Length: 386
Length: 109
Image (cartoon, rainbow over the protein chains, first blue to last red):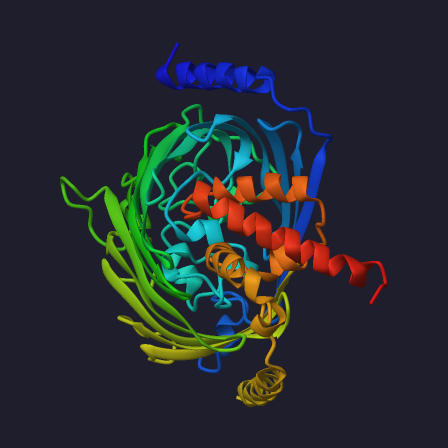
Protein backbone atom coordinates (compact mmCIF):
# COMPACT_ATOMS: atom_id res chain seq x y z
CA UNK A 1 0.00 0.00 0.00
CA UNK A 2 1.49 3.35 -0.98
CA UNK A 3 1.58 6.27 1.44
CA UNK A 4 -1.06 8.02 -0.64
CA UNK A 5 -3.39 5.05 -0.35
CA UNK A 6 -2.73 4.77 3.37
CA UNK A 7 -3.56 8.48 3.76
CA UNK A 8 -6.77 7.98 1.82
CA UNK A 9 -7.85 4.96 3.88
CA UNK A 10 -7.03 6.74 7.14
CA UNK A 11 -9.01 9.82 6.20
CA UNK A 12 -11.91 7.69 5.02
CA UNK A 13 -12.00 5.94 8.39
CA UNK A 14 -11.96 9.32 10.11
CA UNK A 15 -14.76 10.43 7.82
CA UNK A 16 -16.86 7.42 8.74
CA UNK A 17 -16.19 8.02 12.41
CA UNK A 18 -17.30 11.60 11.98
CA UNK A 19 -20.46 10.54 10.21
CA UNK A 20 -21.33 8.14 13.01
CA UNK A 21 -20.46 10.60 15.76
CA UNK A 22 -23.56 11.36 17.81
CA UNK A 23 -24.75 14.87 17.12
CA UNK A 24 -27.88 16.73 18.01
CA UNK A 25 -30.38 15.77 15.39
CA UNK A 26 -31.53 19.09 14.00
CA UNK A 27 -33.74 18.78 11.02
CA UNK A 28 -31.99 19.26 7.70
CA UNK A 29 -30.88 22.87 7.37
CA UNK A 30 -30.39 24.12 3.86
CA UNK A 31 -28.83 27.37 2.74
CA UNK A 32 -28.89 28.53 -0.83
CA UNK A 33 -26.66 31.39 -1.90
CA UNK A 34 -25.30 32.69 -5.15
CA UNK A 35 -23.69 35.50 -7.02
CA UNK A 36 -23.60 37.06 -10.46
CA UNK A 37 -21.00 39.30 -12.03
CA UNK A 38 -21.20 40.77 -15.49
CA UNK A 39 -17.97 42.33 -16.62
CA UNK A 40 -16.69 44.27 -19.59
CA UNK A 41 -12.98 44.71 -20.16
CA UNK A 42 -12.32 47.71 -22.37
CA UNK A 43 -8.81 47.33 -23.82
CA UNK A 44 -8.45 49.91 -26.60
CA UNK A 45 -4.77 49.25 -27.27
CA UNK A 46 -5.04 45.52 -27.89
CA UNK A 47 -4.34 44.59 -31.54
CA UNK A 48 -7.62 43.75 -33.22
CA UNK A 49 -6.09 40.56 -34.66
CA UNK A 50 -5.82 39.28 -31.12
CA UNK A 51 -9.41 40.03 -30.22
CA UNK A 52 -10.97 37.20 -28.32
CA UNK A 53 -7.76 35.30 -27.86
CA UNK A 54 -5.52 37.37 -25.63
CA UNK A 55 -8.13 38.50 -23.11
CA UNK A 56 -11.83 38.29 -22.46
CA UNK A 57 -13.11 41.66 -23.64
CA UNK A 58 -16.83 41.47 -24.22
CA UNK A 59 -19.51 40.95 -21.64
CA UNK A 60 -18.22 38.14 -19.45
CA UNK A 61 -20.64 36.61 -17.00
CA UNK A 62 -19.72 34.68 -13.90
CA UNK A 63 -22.63 33.05 -12.13
CA UNK A 64 -22.67 30.73 -9.20
CA UNK A 65 -25.19 28.96 -7.03
CA UNK A 66 -24.34 27.17 -3.83
CA UNK A 67 -26.38 24.82 -1.70
CA UNK A 68 -25.16 23.95 1.79
CA UNK A 69 -26.96 21.23 3.73
CA UNK A 70 -26.28 20.52 7.38
CA UNK A 71 -27.18 16.92 8.03
CA UNK A 72 -26.11 16.93 11.68
CA UNK A 73 -23.92 19.18 13.81
CA UNK A 74 -20.96 17.20 12.54
CA UNK A 75 -21.82 16.49 8.92
CA UNK A 76 -22.53 18.96 6.16
CA UNK A 77 -22.59 18.86 2.39
CA UNK A 78 -21.84 21.67 -0.05
CA UNK A 79 -22.45 21.87 -3.77
CA UNK A 80 -21.52 24.93 -5.79
CA UNK A 81 -22.01 25.22 -9.52
CA UNK A 82 -20.40 28.02 -11.49
CA UNK A 83 -21.00 29.23 -14.99
CA UNK A 84 -18.14 31.24 -16.38
CA UNK A 85 -15.86 31.53 -19.36
CA UNK A 86 -15.42 27.76 -19.43
CA UNK A 87 -19.11 26.87 -19.22
CA UNK A 88 -20.48 24.99 -16.24
CA UNK A 89 -18.06 23.91 -13.56
CA UNK A 90 -18.58 22.07 -10.31
CA UNK A 91 -16.63 24.36 -8.04
CA UNK A 92 -17.58 22.41 -4.93
CA UNK A 93 -19.21 19.07 -4.24
CA UNK A 94 -18.05 17.73 -0.90
CA UNK A 95 -18.90 16.48 2.54
CA UNK A 96 -17.40 17.98 5.67
CA UNK A 97 -17.15 15.49 8.50
CA UNK A 98 -16.17 17.46 11.56
CA UNK A 99 -15.20 15.91 14.86
CA UNK A 100 -14.42 19.27 16.47
CA UNK A 101 -12.84 22.62 15.57
CA UNK A 102 -9.42 21.00 15.43
CA UNK A 103 -10.32 18.12 13.11
CA UNK A 104 -12.43 18.26 9.98
CA UNK A 105 -12.29 15.84 7.07
CA UNK A 106 -13.39 17.12 3.68
CA UNK A 107 -14.11 14.54 0.98
CA UNK A 108 -15.16 15.26 -2.59
CA UNK A 109 -14.42 18.05 -5.05
CA UNK A 110 -13.12 21.37 -3.71
CA UNK A 111 -10.28 23.87 -4.00
CA UNK A 112 -7.63 22.64 -1.57
CA UNK A 113 -6.45 25.16 1.05
CA UNK A 114 -3.85 27.36 -0.58
CA UNK A 115 -3.06 31.02 -0.01
CA UNK A 116 -5.40 33.75 1.14
CA UNK A 117 -7.13 34.95 -2.02
CA UNK A 118 -8.98 31.78 -2.94
CA UNK A 119 -11.33 32.21 0.01
CA UNK A 120 -12.55 35.40 -1.69
CA UNK A 121 -12.44 34.14 -5.27
CA UNK A 122 -16.19 34.55 -5.75
CA UNK A 123 -16.72 37.86 -7.62
CA UNK A 124 -19.15 38.98 -4.91
CA UNK A 125 -16.40 38.65 -2.31
CA UNK A 126 -13.65 40.71 -3.91
CA UNK A 127 -14.09 44.35 -4.78
CA UNK A 128 -12.21 44.54 -8.07
CA UNK A 129 -13.61 43.07 -11.26
CA UNK A 130 -10.58 40.84 -11.77
CA UNK A 131 -8.27 38.71 -9.66
CA UNK A 132 -4.67 39.44 -8.73
CA UNK A 133 -2.24 38.29 -11.44
CA UNK A 134 -0.88 35.29 -9.48
CA UNK A 135 -4.45 33.93 -9.42
CA UNK A 136 -5.63 35.23 -12.80
CA UNK A 137 -7.94 32.98 -14.75
CA UNK A 138 -8.38 34.98 -17.94
CA UNK A 139 -9.05 38.66 -17.34
CA UNK A 140 -5.43 39.75 -17.69
CA UNK A 141 -4.20 41.16 -20.99
CA UNK A 142 -2.00 38.80 -23.06
CA UNK A 143 -3.27 35.86 -21.02
CA UNK A 144 -2.36 33.32 -23.73
CA UNK A 145 1.26 34.46 -23.77
CA UNK A 146 1.42 33.80 -20.05
CA UNK A 147 -0.89 30.78 -19.78
CA UNK A 148 -2.73 32.69 -17.03
CA UNK A 149 -1.32 33.23 -13.54
CA UNK A 150 0.68 31.02 -11.23
CA UNK A 151 -2.36 29.26 -9.76
CA UNK A 152 -5.59 30.29 -11.53
CA UNK A 153 -8.34 30.54 -8.95
CA UNK A 154 -10.50 28.65 -8.16
CA UNK A 155 -8.73 25.33 -8.59
CA UNK A 156 -11.25 22.59 -7.76
CA UNK A 157 -9.85 19.10 -7.53
CA UNK A 158 -11.12 15.72 -6.40
CA UNK A 159 -9.64 14.52 -3.16
CA UNK A 160 -9.47 14.51 0.61
CA UNK A 161 -8.42 17.27 3.00
CA UNK A 162 -7.91 17.20 6.73
CA UNK A 163 -8.07 20.64 8.29
CA UNK A 164 -8.79 22.41 11.53
CA UNK A 165 -8.14 25.40 13.73
CA UNK A 166 -7.37 26.08 17.35
CA UNK A 167 -7.84 29.29 19.30
CA UNK A 168 -5.44 30.28 22.03
CA UNK A 169 -7.69 32.34 24.26
CA UNK A 170 -9.38 35.11 22.35
CA UNK A 171 -6.34 36.55 20.63
CA UNK A 172 -4.63 33.93 18.48
CA UNK A 173 -5.83 31.21 16.15
CA UNK A 174 -3.71 28.69 14.33
CA UNK A 175 -5.12 26.73 11.40
CA UNK A 176 -3.77 23.91 9.30
CA UNK A 177 -4.72 21.81 6.28
CA UNK A 178 -3.20 18.75 4.64
CA UNK A 179 -4.59 17.18 1.51
CA UNK A 180 -4.23 14.70 -1.31
CA UNK A 181 -6.01 15.71 -4.52
CA UNK A 182 -6.02 14.64 -8.14
CA UNK A 183 -3.81 17.61 -9.09
CA UNK A 184 -3.18 19.55 -12.26
CA UNK A 185 -3.02 17.97 -15.69
CA UNK A 186 -1.46 18.26 -19.12
CA UNK A 187 -1.00 16.08 -22.16
CA UNK A 188 2.17 14.09 -22.67
CA UNK A 189 5.11 16.31 -23.77
CA UNK A 190 3.23 19.49 -22.80
CA UNK A 191 5.45 22.35 -21.68
CA UNK A 192 3.00 23.82 -19.17
CA UNK A 193 -0.12 22.91 -17.22
CA UNK A 194 -3.37 22.74 -19.16
CA UNK A 195 -5.85 24.82 -17.19
CA UNK A 196 -8.53 24.35 -19.83
CA UNK A 197 -8.39 20.59 -19.34
CA UNK A 198 -8.70 21.23 -15.61
CA UNK A 199 -12.18 22.63 -16.24
CA UNK A 200 -13.22 20.11 -18.89
CA UNK A 201 -16.19 17.84 -18.51
CA UNK A 202 -14.00 14.91 -17.52
CA UNK A 203 -12.91 15.28 -13.93
CA UNK A 204 -10.89 12.06 -13.94
CA UNK A 205 -7.19 12.11 -13.14
CA UNK A 206 -4.70 11.61 -15.98
CA UNK A 207 -2.17 9.71 -13.88
CA UNK A 208 -2.11 7.50 -10.81
CA UNK A 209 -0.31 9.78 -8.37
CA UNK A 210 -2.12 12.36 -6.26
CA UNK A 211 -0.83 15.83 -5.56
CA UNK A 212 -0.14 16.46 -1.89
CA UNK A 213 -0.04 19.75 -0.09
CA UNK A 214 -0.85 21.76 2.96
CA UNK A 215 -1.22 25.11 4.60
CA UNK A 216 -0.46 26.62 7.99
CA UNK A 217 -1.75 30.05 8.98
CA UNK A 218 -2.11 32.15 12.07
CA UNK A 219 -4.55 34.93 12.92
CA UNK A 220 -3.74 37.38 15.68
CA UNK A 221 -6.33 39.79 17.05
CA UNK A 222 -4.17 42.75 17.85
CA UNK A 223 -7.11 44.89 18.97
CA UNK A 224 -10.92 45.00 18.86
CA UNK A 225 -10.78 45.96 15.19
CA UNK A 226 -7.28 44.90 14.20
CA UNK A 227 -6.50 41.43 12.79
CA UNK A 228 -3.30 40.08 11.33
CA UNK A 229 -3.37 36.82 9.38
CA UNK A 230 -0.29 35.26 7.83
CA UNK A 231 0.29 31.88 6.32
CA UNK A 232 2.36 29.59 4.13
CA UNK A 233 1.11 27.05 1.60
CA UNK A 234 2.57 24.43 -0.70
CA UNK A 235 1.61 21.60 -3.01
CA UNK A 236 3.63 19.12 -5.04
CA UNK A 237 2.74 16.53 -7.65
CA UNK A 238 3.09 15.23 -11.18
CA UNK A 239 0.98 16.43 -14.08
CA UNK A 240 1.69 14.16 -17.06
CA UNK A 241 0.24 10.71 -17.73
CA UNK A 242 3.60 9.02 -17.11
CA UNK A 243 4.37 10.85 -13.83
CA UNK A 244 7.68 12.02 -15.27
CA UNK A 245 7.28 15.74 -14.76
CA UNK A 246 6.56 17.58 -11.54
CA UNK A 247 5.25 20.86 -10.30
CA UNK A 248 5.61 22.45 -6.91
CA UNK A 249 3.62 25.54 -5.95
CA UNK A 250 4.57 27.47 -2.84
CA UNK A 251 3.39 30.72 -1.37
CA UNK A 252 3.25 33.08 1.56
CA UNK A 253 0.52 35.58 2.44
CA UNK A 254 -0.18 38.31 4.94
CA UNK A 255 -3.42 40.20 5.58
CA UNK A 256 -3.67 43.14 7.95
CA UNK A 257 -7.08 44.54 8.71
CA UNK A 258 -7.63 47.59 10.85
CA UNK A 259 -11.15 48.87 11.01
CA UNK A 260 -12.50 48.37 7.51
CA UNK A 261 -9.12 48.97 5.90
CA UNK A 262 -7.50 45.88 4.40
CA UNK A 263 -3.87 45.52 3.41
CA UNK A 264 -3.08 42.27 1.67
CA UNK A 265 0.11 40.90 0.17
CA UNK A 266 0.77 37.51 -1.30
CA UNK A 267 3.58 35.79 -3.19
CA UNK A 268 3.35 32.52 -5.12
CA UNK A 269 5.85 30.56 -7.16
CA UNK A 270 5.50 27.48 -9.33
CA UNK A 271 8.52 25.39 -10.24
CA UNK A 272 7.75 22.97 -13.01
CA UNK A 273 9.84 20.46 -14.94
CA UNK A 274 9.02 19.71 -18.57
CA UNK A 275 9.98 17.49 -21.46
CA UNK A 276 13.17 18.69 -23.21
CA UNK A 277 13.52 15.75 -25.61
CA UNK A 278 12.20 17.79 -28.54
CA UNK A 279 14.55 20.75 -28.87
CA UNK A 280 12.56 22.07 -31.83
CA UNK A 281 9.59 22.69 -29.53
CA UNK A 282 11.63 25.06 -27.36
CA UNK A 283 12.72 28.64 -27.90
CA UNK A 284 16.17 28.33 -26.31
CA UNK A 285 18.85 25.66 -26.60
CA UNK A 286 18.61 23.25 -23.70
CA UNK A 287 21.83 23.18 -21.66
CA UNK A 288 23.33 19.79 -20.69
CA UNK A 289 22.10 20.20 -17.11
CA UNK A 290 19.47 22.27 -15.37
CA UNK A 291 17.44 23.36 -18.37
CA UNK A 292 14.44 21.16 -17.80
CA UNK A 293 12.35 23.47 -15.62
CA UNK A 294 10.90 26.95 -15.36
CA UNK A 295 9.88 29.02 -12.38
CA UNK A 296 6.92 31.36 -12.43
CA UNK A 297 6.58 33.89 -9.64
CA UNK A 298 3.56 36.04 -8.93
CA UNK A 299 2.86 38.62 -6.26
CA UNK A 300 0.41 41.36 -5.34
CA UNK A 301 0.02 44.09 -2.75
CA UNK A 302 -3.44 45.53 -2.29
CA UNK A 303 -4.92 48.25 -0.11
CA UNK A 304 -8.69 48.46 0.22
CA UNK A 305 -9.99 51.59 1.89
CA UNK A 306 -13.60 52.70 2.50
CA UNK A 307 -13.99 56.21 1.09
CA UNK A 308 -17.54 56.93 2.16
CA UNK A 309 -20.97 55.40 2.47
CA UNK A 310 -20.85 52.36 0.21
CA UNK A 311 -17.75 53.46 -1.70
CA UNK A 312 -14.39 51.69 -1.49
CA UNK A 313 -11.11 52.60 -3.11
CA UNK A 314 -8.67 49.85 -4.03
CA UNK A 315 -5.04 50.33 -4.89
CA UNK A 316 -3.22 47.27 -6.21
CA UNK A 317 0.20 46.50 -7.65
CA UNK A 318 0.83 43.01 -8.93
CA UNK A 319 3.05 41.17 -11.35
CA UNK A 320 4.41 37.96 -12.81
CA UNK A 321 7.98 36.87 -13.46
CA UNK A 322 8.71 33.79 -15.55
CA UNK A 323 12.22 32.39 -15.62
CA UNK A 324 13.28 29.54 -17.91
CA UNK A 325 12.87 28.05 -21.35
CA UNK A 326 9.57 28.38 -23.17
CA UNK A 327 7.77 27.09 -26.24
CA UNK A 328 9.22 28.06 -29.60
CA UNK A 329 7.18 30.91 -31.02
CA UNK A 330 6.25 32.39 -27.67
CA UNK A 331 6.78 36.16 -27.44
CA UNK A 332 8.06 35.71 -23.90
CA UNK A 333 11.77 35.56 -23.20
CA UNK A 334 13.43 33.35 -20.62
CA UNK A 335 13.12 36.28 -18.20
CA UNK A 336 9.64 37.61 -18.88
CA UNK A 337 7.89 40.11 -16.65
CA UNK A 338 4.59 41.92 -16.43
CA UNK A 339 3.73 44.55 -13.86
CA UNK A 340 0.24 45.92 -13.41
CA UNK A 341 -1.02 48.96 -11.51
CA UNK A 342 -4.70 49.20 -10.63
CA UNK A 343 -6.66 52.08 -9.15
CA UNK A 344 -10.14 50.78 -8.57
CA UNK A 345 -13.38 51.71 -6.94
CA UNK A 346 -16.34 49.69 -5.84
CA UNK A 347 -19.69 51.39 -5.29
CA UNK A 348 -22.79 49.95 -3.66
CA UNK A 349 -25.75 50.45 -5.99
CA UNK A 350 -28.15 48.59 -3.77
CA UNK A 351 -27.53 46.42 -0.75
CA UNK A 352 -25.79 43.37 -2.19
CA UNK A 353 -25.08 44.88 -5.61
CA UNK A 354 -21.85 46.68 -6.49
CA UNK A 355 -20.48 48.56 -9.45
CA UNK A 356 -16.77 47.96 -9.97
CA UNK A 357 -14.51 50.20 -12.02
CA UNK A 358 -10.77 49.88 -12.33
CA UNK A 359 -8.39 51.41 -14.86
CA UNK A 360 -5.28 49.24 -15.16
CA UNK A 361 -1.83 49.95 -16.54
CA UNK A 362 0.20 46.97 -17.78
CA UNK A 363 3.95 47.11 -18.26
CA UNK A 364 5.38 44.14 -20.18
CA UNK A 365 9.06 43.59 -20.83
CA UNK A 366 8.32 42.53 -24.43
CA UNK A 367 6.46 44.17 -27.27
CA UNK A 368 3.20 43.14 -28.87
CA UNK A 369 2.50 43.10 -32.63
CA UNK A 370 2.21 46.91 -32.55
CA UNK A 371 5.51 47.33 -30.71
CA UNK A 372 3.85 48.27 -27.42
CA UNK A 373 5.18 47.42 -24.00
CA UNK A 374 2.61 49.51 -22.12
CA UNK A 375 -1.11 48.86 -22.29
CA UNK A 376 -4.14 50.16 -20.47
CA UNK A 377 -7.59 48.74 -19.96
CA UNK A 378 -10.70 49.59 -18.00
CA UNK A 379 -12.26 46.73 -16.08
CA UNK A 380 -15.95 47.34 -15.39
CA UNK A 381 -18.42 45.02 -13.74
CA UNK A 382 -21.64 44.82 -11.82
CA UNK A 383 -21.65 42.11 -9.16
CA UNK A 384 -24.38 40.98 -6.84
CA UNK A 385 -24.84 38.35 -4.17
CA UNK A 386 -27.93 36.73 -2.76
CA UNK B 1 -11.56 53.57 -29.62
CA UNK B 2 -15.30 54.21 -29.79
CA UNK B 3 -15.91 51.36 -27.32
CA UNK B 4 -13.43 52.94 -24.93
CA UNK B 5 -15.21 56.29 -25.03
CA UNK B 6 -18.65 54.71 -24.67
CA UNK B 7 -17.48 52.62 -21.74
CA UNK B 8 -15.96 55.65 -20.04
CA UNK B 9 -19.16 57.65 -20.51
CA UNK B 10 -21.40 54.83 -19.29
CA UNK B 11 -19.08 54.14 -16.35
CA UNK B 12 -19.00 57.81 -15.40
CA UNK B 13 -22.77 58.03 -15.57
CA UNK B 14 -23.17 54.90 -13.44
CA UNK B 15 -20.62 56.20 -10.97
CA UNK B 16 -22.39 59.52 -10.72
CA UNK B 17 -25.76 57.83 -10.17
CA UNK B 18 -24.38 55.35 -7.67
CA UNK B 19 -22.53 58.03 -5.71
CA UNK B 20 -25.70 59.99 -5.15
CA UNK B 21 -27.58 56.95 -3.89
CA UNK B 22 -25.44 56.67 -0.75
CA UNK B 23 -26.29 53.04 -0.30
CA UNK B 24 -24.32 50.90 2.09
CA UNK B 25 -24.11 47.15 2.44
CA UNK B 26 -24.51 47.34 6.19
CA UNK B 27 -27.06 49.09 8.37
CA UNK B 28 -27.60 52.80 8.51
CA UNK B 29 -26.05 53.48 11.96
CA UNK B 30 -28.92 55.79 12.85
CA UNK B 31 -31.32 52.87 12.38
CA UNK B 32 -29.56 50.78 15.03
CA UNK B 33 -30.78 51.47 18.62
CA UNK B 34 -28.07 52.64 21.05
CA UNK B 35 -28.23 49.39 23.03
CA UNK B 36 -27.48 47.41 19.85
CA UNK B 37 -24.63 49.61 18.62
CA UNK B 38 -21.84 47.65 20.34
CA UNK B 39 -23.17 44.32 19.06
CA UNK B 40 -23.59 45.76 15.57
CA UNK B 41 -20.00 46.98 15.65
CA UNK B 42 -18.74 43.45 16.33
CA UNK B 43 -21.03 42.01 13.66
CA UNK B 44 -20.01 44.61 11.08
CA UNK B 45 -16.30 44.26 11.79
CA UNK B 46 -16.17 40.47 11.84
CA UNK B 47 -18.70 39.59 9.18
CA UNK B 48 -17.36 41.97 6.55
CA UNK B 49 -13.88 40.46 6.54
CA UNK B 50 -14.58 37.83 3.87
CA UNK B 51 -17.95 38.83 2.41
CA UNK B 52 -20.39 41.67 2.09
CA UNK B 53 -22.68 42.43 5.04
CA UNK B 54 -25.51 42.21 2.53
CA UNK B 55 -25.23 38.42 2.60
CA UNK B 56 -26.48 37.96 6.18
CA UNK B 57 -28.71 41.05 6.14
CA UNK B 58 -30.48 40.00 2.96
CA UNK B 59 -30.70 36.32 3.86
CA UNK B 60 -34.20 36.47 5.34
CA UNK B 61 -33.21 34.09 8.14
CA UNK B 62 -35.29 34.67 11.25
CA UNK B 63 -34.69 31.49 13.23
CA UNK B 64 -32.24 31.88 16.14
CA UNK B 65 -31.23 28.23 15.95
CA UNK B 66 -30.36 28.63 12.32
CA UNK B 67 -28.30 31.74 13.05
CA UNK B 68 -26.42 29.87 15.79
CA UNK B 69 -25.50 27.14 13.35
CA UNK B 70 -24.62 29.60 10.61
CA UNK B 71 -22.42 31.82 12.78
CA UNK B 72 -20.69 28.68 14.06
CA UNK B 73 -19.99 27.67 10.48
CA UNK B 74 -18.60 31.12 9.67
CA UNK B 75 -16.49 31.08 12.82
CA UNK B 76 -14.77 27.95 11.55
CA UNK B 77 -13.91 29.49 8.18
CA UNK B 78 -10.14 29.86 7.79
CA UNK B 79 -8.91 33.23 8.99
CA UNK B 80 -12.39 34.43 9.94
CA UNK B 81 -11.07 36.00 13.13
CA UNK B 82 -14.40 35.19 14.82
CA UNK B 83 -13.58 33.93 18.29
CA UNK B 84 -15.88 32.26 20.81
CA UNK B 85 -16.28 35.63 22.54
CA UNK B 86 -17.46 37.27 19.31
CA UNK B 87 -20.31 34.82 18.86
CA UNK B 88 -22.61 36.20 21.54
CA UNK B 89 -22.69 39.86 20.37
CA UNK B 90 -23.04 38.73 16.75
CA UNK B 91 -25.95 36.44 17.62
CA UNK B 92 -27.55 39.13 19.81
CA UNK B 93 -27.43 41.58 16.92
CA UNK B 94 -28.80 39.04 14.43
CA UNK B 95 -31.61 38.18 16.82
CA UNK B 96 -32.52 41.87 17.12
CA UNK B 97 -32.21 42.38 13.37
CA UNK B 98 -34.36 39.34 12.54
CA UNK B 99 -36.98 40.40 15.05
CA UNK B 100 -37.06 43.96 13.75
CA UNK B 101 -37.42 42.75 10.18
CA UNK B 102 -40.24 40.32 10.91
CA UNK B 103 -43.04 42.92 11.00
CA UNK B 104 -41.91 44.20 7.58
CA UNK B 105 -41.78 40.66 6.16
CA UNK B 106 -45.22 39.95 7.58
CA UNK B 107 -46.55 43.13 6.07
CA UNK B 108 -46.98 44.87 9.41
CA UNK B 109 -45.91 48.35 10.27
